[in-house]
Image (tube, rainbow, N blue to C red; front, side, top):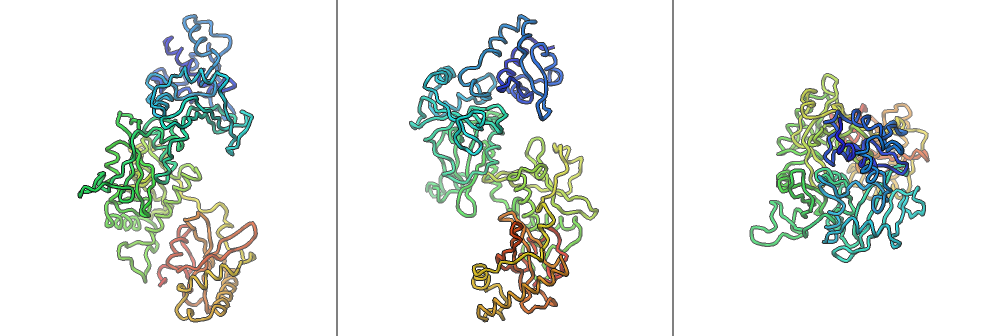
Length: 584
């Protein structure tokens, strides 16, 4: 049975979480109960708790069949010990900040970081909730509404975001804004998020990976953090550190932005264990900073060690030798196919084709997960410290070949280390994976995207031919480099027409490939400048399809070694002209 105090607290939470129609999502109520120290599992879970409150609440479901709750209008009278307080606290008309939407970060017991704590960082003095509420109820208060396109609107029902300005300045004398937002116009507004016009954006220091904001929210248990307000939690000046994690070099020189490897800030946020949280940018190979990484001092020290690893795309190894051994073992476990070029040896890797394949394949999986928001592409365990992914390869028994590894975040980007191939189902469940069947990447949606259409035109315009013949002349065989431009153009025209004739009789002759930089499908047309397919083609012409105009645009020409790796991402090429056993 629920004690009266617990009943009252849950009813107040339902009132605070209620939307404009009076209904509150049960999931939101359960989450807020846990934040306030009420573990519903102790009382038998939500299915047992809310029916016990049926004399005070209505229980129903929304259009998505998700449970929703609503305070009854007429039955808070059966238990007089609860009635007065609940009617006063839960049923009173909402005023001030709570009138604007559901305030998930109100100051409450056991709340790690409230909206007032965030204001304290911005203003450098304590602001009371009464000050804010009094201002919101005054005639001076003004609010702006913005739709999903960020355009100003006068209708709150059309708004996704609403914003207001506070009557006091931040510590830099800048304006402070409060913001409530929602995903859809049918949702309740949730807030409050503060940000200041005078706070310099962290983007000044480097590029921010959106996933890093989610990581910071998770470890700080603070859902109020956004890219626009993240700097408001910073309580220190930027410090630049060298690769060893020090602010000075051994000769005593101060580490600068130019000479540093990290740009780090301390925040007022804390981890679950109470440690101070730092955020930092990491300098990449191009000499610019990217991020964010976040964590306590121990996490930062671990990132120093991780930076010394050998990276193969998104995969991290302690050494290049261990990386090579990993790919050799992976090749042994997968279905038999050539993973190296017979006539071109790689000094560092025994399976260079497999290495390139898995690097791009994993990058595509992350793209589908992070940008396209496709589920089950990158699978996390319960504690989100391990990742599971599908290689899109089959093992020698025709089973999906999957890999599991530990998460490491560098420069705000997720990498995988300690990779283990072919984990057992028992092993995955012990590691905390609920979903043990990650999906392979999808490079195309329609089979027509990867088939050459012989009735489409090829746009052989002057700009593209100038690029191919003049700017890529070094990719032509030596015997053609001395020809004049018109002669070379004629040979290229004849070779394209020759390839089209072959393609009319063999639909596999022109091969699809994936272009990772722009995440799109292109086609590879083999070019035989002597109009004979009895020998290896001179190079491949890259064609970009435009299905709206039924047109192909020739982009450039590439060597066969390079295009094989891109084509292998889609499928193992069947055509004899694109075979690693004969590529020279």
